[in-house]
Structure formats: C-alpha cells, structure tokens
Length: 295
Image 1 (cartoon, one colour):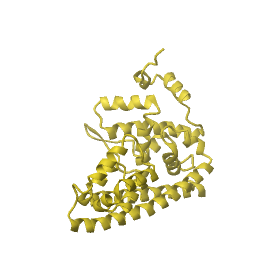
Image 2 (cartoon, one colour; image 1 turned 90 degrees about the vertical axis):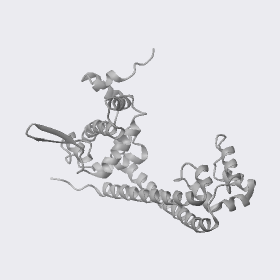
Image 3 (cartoon, one colour; image 1 turned 30 degrees about the vertical axis):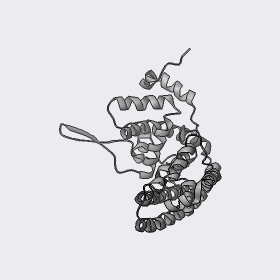
Image 4 (tube, rainbow, N blue to C red; image 1 turned 180 degrees about the horizontal axis):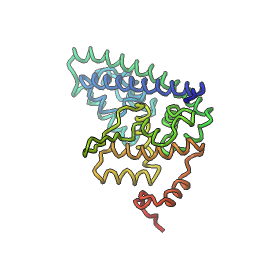
C-alpha cells in the first residue's frame, strides 16, 4: 500500500514542478523577444548570445531602438557594459563595433516604433518573472537542505543544485513505492516497451510515464558525462552503435536509475570508488571502454 509523502517532500515537489512551468514561460517570452528584435534590431541579437540573462533585457530597456543606441554614444555604451559586468576582452571590442553600426541594418520607422514597444514590454515581463524564479529557487534550496535525503541526492554526479531536488521530489520518500529498479525505470520512461505478436517482436519508445522525471533524468544523464568517465564511455559506445544523442542519453539514464534505486533503498550516497569496484567485481563491459590512466 502506497504511503503519502511527508509535507516537506510534497511542497518540494510542487515547487519544482511550478518552477519548470515558469521556466517554460520564460523560454516562450525569450523567443517572442528575439522574434521582435529580429524585425527591427538585429544588432541587439548579435551583441548578446544568452537572452535568459538580466543584462540582455536591461539592454533592451536602456536602448530600445537602434536610434536610441546610436544617440547614447560610446561613453554610455561603456558605462552600461561595466555596470552589468559585461566587460570581457574577447567580446568588449566586438560589442562596441556592433553598437556603432546599429542603424546600418534596422527596420523602417513604423516597424521600429511598434516592435520596440513590444520588446520593452517583454523585457519587463522577463525581469519580473526572473525575480519570482529566484524566489522559487531560494525556497527549493531551503527545503532541499532540510530534507533527510539531501546528502544522498546531492552526491549524484551532474545533478547539482537544480536537478537533485527534482529527482528527490519525484521519487518521494516511500521506499516501498518502487520494489525493483525496473519499476522506477518504467515510471521514468527510460525503459522501452516490448511486445510480441506471433513471430514478430518489437520494441518501442515508452510514452506512458512521469514526463517531468523523464526530462530530469535526460538532463542529469547528459550532465553526468563530464564528471563520470564511465558515463561518457557508455554514451560514446551507444553513439558508435548508431543511436541518436537522445537515445544514448536515455540508455545512460536507464543505467543511472538502477544505481539511484539502490542508493535510494539503502540510504547510501554515491561513491565513485565503490561503484567502480562493483563494476570491476561483476565484470562490467563499460570498464573495458574507459581509457587506461597514464603512468
């Protein structure tokens, strides 16, 4: 019989899910902002690569049109870049050069007038939304730090401060919820669906699963690669077999969930040495793929 999670876990789960919803809204607003700028302000798009940063939105609010940017002059450009800590030797000269050419390629007066109002409105919405996202992140970190399983999930390579709370929240604290690793893998959507009709046997992608957990595992598997040599070796082996990036990450996530299930059931943190010892003990083929350390 399933047991209800404790209030701390329930609140953490709801906050993590709502945070994802707000992040999706931020992504939608960023796409709208970039589309608006593309119609009248191409220099702004070239000057900033990451439009999820406050500095990019502040630029639109400070210099809403190419004409406003040109009128401001070099001194105000430099002041803006220094104020928002955007001085980088590799980007500073390029940005100043782009700013000087702001009116070379820009929209006509009618388009500029209309779309600049939209861009400023979107930048303002993004700033307000980010303020709320920061509050969500602070609350999530506070609850995660108080949870009994904090150290367990915090030890997962690549999970870090954002994905670890999500993994914890979606698994919950009832150790009897998943009686085997396969149950967790099916719930997370990493396990394929097999079916047979007569002599025909097929395997297909599992669609009935917990979508948020599947997405979280996908991100976690990818971020674990730089930190775990065996994870990178496993991923590269799947890619060499002809599998796509997404499919290779799904296979890696499947393997990670088996490890996580054991940790979750026993309450043990992830220890690279212990895991590597188990792989050697059981003759895992993954170990044969790992590069031999130089003497």
